[in-house]
Image 1 (cartoon, rainbow, N blue to C red):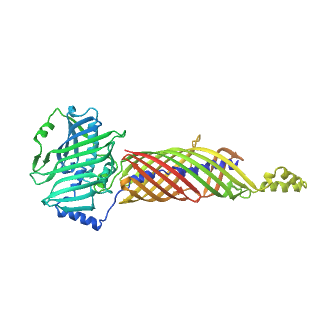
Image 2 (cartoon, one colour):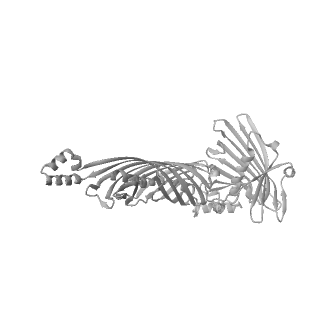
Image 3 (tube, rainbow, N blue to C red):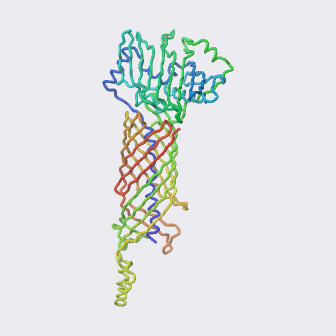
Length: 554
């Protein structure tokens, strides 16, 4: 009875280690961090300064909303799939109050929206990205800047966008090469082209070209006159697709200098009271301080996440002590020669939220299935004591007893198989930090298990995972190494409800020989801005484990 009933508690405690599934979040929470510029980067910024180019100019390729606090823009869009053409147009109206809060609205004539496209939703999504990027820190890579003085007196300045500072929403800008034409210290035009295919919206783009022209306002400011984007590629079904988008400012408003009107006709049109209006909700509560961090050029992950994880862990360990009902049984069962072989599988669901850009908290629930076999080394001491007692009473009787029950009198192995199922719940947190392509994080999980059919939860277990990693920014992938700590006690103790000996509830205290630390190695891959897949392998002296986690962020 002792060996059969003490193992459920033992397996339940060991199984808690299978709930440590928080790695995926730490990958997404990694930022760029503080950065020291190399000599090449210093020279690149000096080229911008020499030819009168503002560091904010490259951002216009990503967002035109940074040009002013109060402005109106006209947006036209066409999508051609095979021979079907879909065309739509609308206006963006931006206003900023004295506290810096932005009110952004879409104004449109329903007759000018293609009924086959949800144009308002697409414009809204694109505008939210541009809003987040309006104050983005350094967007270009200074180490890639070159300048060529042309024969006509103009200067061609070329550069790449930064592959570290760009968020996943517009990660395709990492594949762009930019050329700016400058004349007399003023930008004339800017051309952006792709260097490799990339995913854009729901299409695969093979050819991308963005052309921007600039104009000088009456107050001396240089602003965007027009931005046109043309792209060719294919749909998910392999159909050819051509995209064309044009963004043109209509009017800039200044609290002191009044209005700078670029198109009288469009200003009259957008003032039509019959136009419908849709407000864009820009700000989100989480993560706190998200905007402040983005302004430093640090990519902030989407705040909420849901993930599912499967883990298989195998353990092989020994014992140090057997104590039942306060009585040591080491003379009957040799703990140093007894071995437990445990295989457990877990399936968990986790929900999480980024409280701060570098701090994530989560909760999880799931199931654990344990298959175990305990080979207890029986010393034969019970049979030998019976044999000696019987021989003292009647010579030869003890020998005859042991001849009939040799398993009781001789040393041997008693195998006890177990098949157990548990519920598991837990909470945890991840802290992370990054510098360029390197990152570090630590994840802690506190979890409990309960045998199915029981209403009593076991003792809580703390699991900690520190790790270091390297991220391949262009491929949205990370590799990492580290360690995993499972805070299991060197002894398992508890009671078995419903089992009594001598009127007392059956209780036990079993010493186990477990290594709390294991090495880990793994990788994480992001798919688009919402999905990620992580794989982890653990190896220690007494355990090894394999974990797969698939997550969705929103």
